[in-house]
Length: 422
Image 1: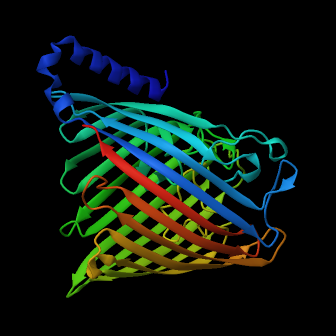
Image 2: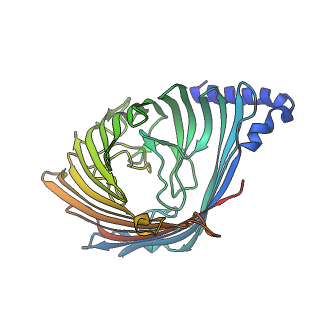
């Protein structure tokens, strides 16, 4: 019997015992602490390919990738039943409808894409349901099922119509003040533009289960965090991550630092071949009033790019952006960024971000080096009160240019309207 079956059967058995007693004696926290919301997400995406770098779709040069969807994201989370061991359940209901877009303008990431480039089709809608059971004793929680998991070593991507989810089991324990421990295993992956559940994979190569463990320790009034993580995608890669973050008030300023080191290599039968990657990175920020300034540096080492499960976010990297993560072999990249909160001008809820990122020293197959750069902006407004309170509107505009790869300019318009049902 596999580890996942043992964990699942254990949780199901414990849950059955809990339900064997009168439900009224246990259900108070389950219902009273429940939260249910429905997020209405409208997403428009347009990418114009430049300099003849566009792909060929269905026998024609694509020119642009474009799509428009309306999504419905139901997030229902119960509380815990009363008793020494509390039980609960979380449900994600995900459904997205195509408003515009077709196979010849695919590659937006908004909808599933079926078939090879020469005969591709895009469905009119897609969706899935993710259910996870949970049990809690003291400050330790066990979760089994499928959910939107965000861990430093594995980050589900929520950058399009529907969020990515993983199916597995996770234990989170915070019994010691300041210290949170994590451990678990994921065995299925539902990417952001897919209704199916596939094996955990890397670069299209299926591996075994994704096993992970880690810990985060906060101290200094929670201003400092040290995290240490290790993960193995069976028969593909293993990876370790050390992180240090710190926030320090200095007069009218708040200074911040995010330092990280990642090392990875092939694992087991090495289905994806010999892998070797290291990441050295640092992001330093300074906030004063309504302005935040940031500089970041990221250096790749080893023969391969940064390793992550297919479809997962690159958010662990300090130079991860809308269009690229600057994670090619041997790449050196830096960024400058400025954020402004217009509350200082009497417009609360309105924020603006601008950043420029540049990468060089990219190792090119066959020899030589390449460079790339990206410019990205985001203007966002969240309604503060009234009928449409919490409605957020985001406009993302970006450009990327590469010596090797696709050159493009992008515009994204995203509406999120969360409705609290319970």
